[in-house]
Image (cartoon, rainbow, N blue to C red; front, side):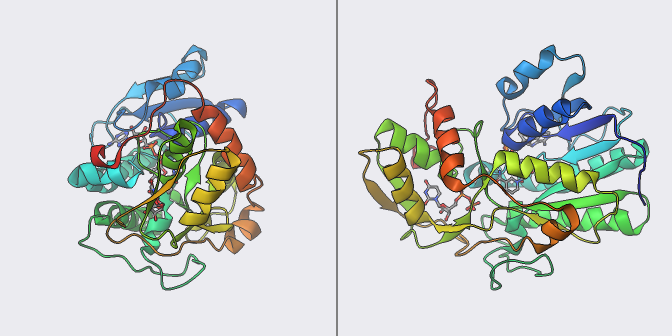
Length: 327
Ligand code: NAD
Ligand code: UDP
């Protein structure tokens, strides 16, 4: 099922968040009208405040779990509505699960009524603590279904399932992006994710917190690359048959990242080791063969450059990093 006409209007659920606000920026820059729907659970009005002067931008305060989402004529629906940082999504796990399951169900119904194309922001967390490395889309994952991360991991897995049920029913053109760790300006300095934590700690000369022995790995994608991938996945004429990994395959250990940030910022911070959170995945790196061949997409921003841009943004006065006990 391919929509051949040029899209005019996109709805971005979770559009006031870190990724969502960059997506709104880019969609407007490409000439679309944008409706941003957000409940400001983890997002911020300030992320989209500059867009509110643009007549093509509409901000709707609403919760995706509310079945009475206002109907709008839209061509594209992006669902990014979900907390993404472990401390945030674990702080109210039932709400996280409901946002991902009930919220996704509501947005799928909304997109069906609108005759829109739908993109789900899924996650590398569907692979859990993976036994296959790097992770390909045909890997079914290794998730603890009753652990602290399950509200997010299983919520996102159920959301994918709902997406493909709608797709198989023939009622909706659905695309699923499995997003790997992404970083950049507008991450909340208090959300507990590694890049924001370490950059702000290094900038403030405070102890850099490494969980466990720091040997676990992640692969970090800069936000502009990721947003380009999301739009390419939504725009491609041929509907991909399954999910598409979007992430940067450059893998780095947490301890190496800490040393790197310390050195790059000439920081005097020392490194302190804290307990490893439960079910923390040991390795994570995307196989992006599918994204390359279907979308002609590869990430372009090297880690050094992305970290420098993000550090410059965190250098803006007023940011602070949360202490582990506050999260
Ligand atoms: P974020 O927390 O900055 O943004 C999420 C946005 O969704 C926020 O603006 C929040 O207020 C909004 N939201 C949450 N619950 C909602 C609800 N019930 N109704 C309406 N709005 C709601 O997180 P992010 O990093 O920008 O992540 C965006 C999406 O991308 C999420 O779905 C996340 O799971 C996915 N993702 C992100 C990453 C990453 O590294 N950033 C990795 C994998 C997947
Ligand atoms: N981490 C860390 N110090 C921090 C925050 C996170 O060592 O201050 C570790 C965390 O345990 C995980 C990795 O960094 O192994 C990435 O954590 P993040 O929360 O950014 O993302 P996710 O675990 O969801 O990949």
